[in-house]
Length: 240
Image (tube, rainbow, N blue to C red):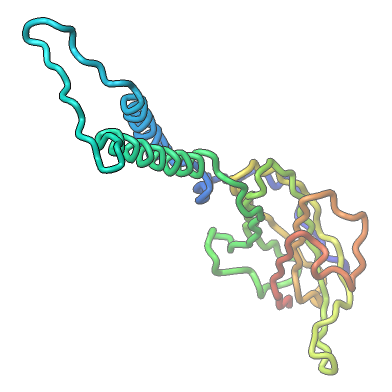
């Protein structure tokens, strides 16, 4: 008897949570502080470039004394002023590079999370042993970190597999499509939703979950089921 999937929409109890931003996201507190430092350094540079002015002649006015000459004939304050300008320019370049790195994040790694939780929302108490024809529930989680909104497609298969001692591998004897549904996950968000299934054939010993970020193929050969999706998960079952 072919296995059956439970009827009813899967979006009745949808749970979403915001995923913390990655290390490439700008820091809202650090960036303004660096901008203020950069502005102050720029003011220092403008002040250093402005020529010194002496006060107007008359009583109480101060005149600048002649700067002492060094051995090469240059003015000592002029040399100090040049060194100050070089130092301020170096600080400006360093601050500008830091602000650019923090405020303009680079493109980080793109990936999708795909996981299964037990009916209580924990990574435990999975329905792995039960009587045939009885409904069983798990929670499917999809985390989108692909830098764009994606409508994923999930396919579930009831699989009968056998272990081959000669090749030391499991081979798929039969695979029956249980269900196919779509879930739209915004960028940098995670969606978790319950999924209820029903296994009718006691020979089924594995439940396969395939996730596709693009439209899935119309038909997947049983021998190519493993690894056919963008992400794959499975549960080993004992159906009585």
